[in-house]
Image (cartoon, rainbow, N blue to C red; front, side, top):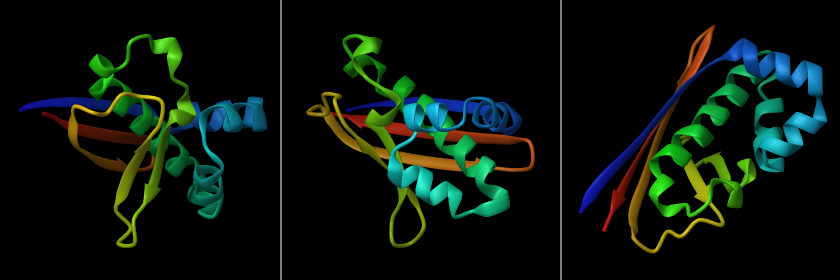
Length: 124
């Protein structure tokens, strides 16, 4: 077994500026409908949640990079972050070969200025 990790940190203002400048074009390119609905439900805190999900997508791409033949073969929406019944984030991954992946674990966090995500993948 091998362990692969991916980490990403992003300034929340960068995501906020992208959303304000590009609007739905940015949102619909990067986030799934479930992710948009979840983040929008957070009202004033929505940019922190968007940024955390953005960081998670970057982190999972890094952790799964050896399973991705061509980085242009996947899109932002192939990685979806949702919360389980306990509120813990979990990843849904599409269009990536996961047959050698035993487990994927994710942790995301945010504060006033930054969002961070860490993804750990256990490879068979």
